[in-house]
Length: 225
Ligand SMILES: [Zn+2]
Image 1 (cartoon, rainbow, N blue to C red):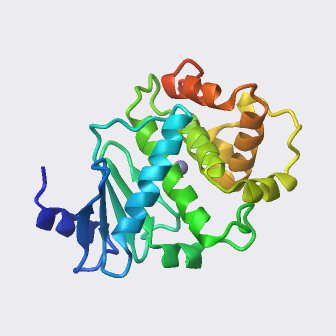
Image 2 (spheres, rainbow, N blue to C red; image 1 turned 120 degrees about the horizontal axis):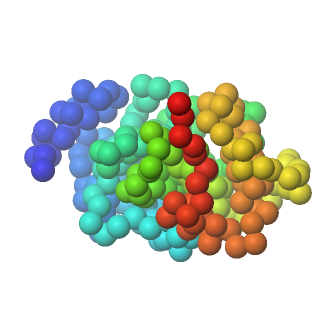
């Protein structure tokens, strides 16, 4: 257990957080928000709790015994919009304003307004946190983890934004499970996200399928030699 001051110092060492960062335990005690005074922690608490409820409803539960620290970063050290640190119950996510400034103008989700986009990214990282608690029999289960994270991110969006996203996709194109792989993921996450969503859309019961991937009944990763 870290004392608040120690955890703040560690956060500063990790980069980006100002010295006056405060940690707030949310009403849902699974979440602790670390932010400077400018970003209302209670708002992020509410978004995290609602996201976790929606994840649980789609078979991506975050156990009651977890305590996830969510650090709101005025700037990110890496160019990514969110980071879950495996095994550490730590999420780093840009503040809503910083996130807005980092968004690509030409992504398949560029039409999504700031608030649902932020909620989507937090949902993505919370899905990683939930999946992290599941055993992986291989060196890495990155494809399954990102499949769940990206599809849950899309599912968290308002229906109209999902419809706009889908209007740019060939929703009936046959997607094999092999098309979802780490190479696509690293080369072009936007393509991976689109393929994952089309693939999930074609399952007869998407949340049952997500549950199977969560539980390892369906594997998306392979032993690498
Ligand atoms: Zn991810």
